[in-house]
Image (tube, rainbow, N blue to C red; front, side):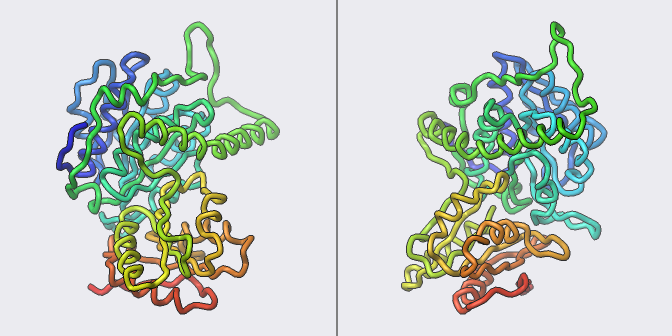
Length: 390
């Protein structure tokens, strides 16, 4: 294990490269490469890496970048890429195709506001617009969490109980361009953790097949149901992967989420990505004052961990959700999922707080105001927009 001071983009590029190199004993690796701020440094890192059996393919668009990944994965290679914002939007058709083809591609989504108007800073609308694609989605709170989750993503995606692609999201600039001390994996460790990639339905010369042909309604329904079953198995596969990760790396990453002080909480705040780190600071300060506040750092968004979340919330009657995203005409996307999860407990107040859109700072002061508001509530209102002081 090598400890280094690196940016999030550098950490992601390093980890993707080692994961790709680990498949040199099988059918190698490939990535479609197209730049977009703030993920470009990931692709630049990969372009400079010398793979024993792999190729980084520069293309003319994000749509083609995912096309390269689809072709590589259908050929049995370990495939990966990265994108952001309108690049993900341009890629959408092939994102859905990769999921429906059941290809274990891993993509880093460096969260950035969709435009127009153009904004290069963070919110989660870009990856969350893909929430109905057949992809798992992870949200990471730190550079170390990012590194660990990328490796877990390959392990889960390529497990035959799942065999679905994975998005690993991080905050643009807040994670991608800042530096933190990270325990970077070494090749020998990644080789032990990631078995050779095996895509059961890869194209073969000795067994020609058609991919993506026409199906009838009943076949399509069965196909979607099979995907649902794979999604439902993903948390168990992730738990197995976390256990094995700890054996190899002597460090235990979070699974579907991390809960803190939820057992006796009068109120619980749910957050994701780097907002969770700020929230943790506020919660610990409040606990020191004797206030019974808890938190959940929600890491796995697809599949949404409903049963685990219900267990963590327990008897708590007030739940607040921090959403760095917005579904027009509805509210925050994470709030929608939490509300659906808690429909079995109608006596729980579930309040949405929309914060940090377009890269606004979600400071401890902002979260303190939210905690104050939630603790006083006896009922929920429409999603509350928190104005951040400039």
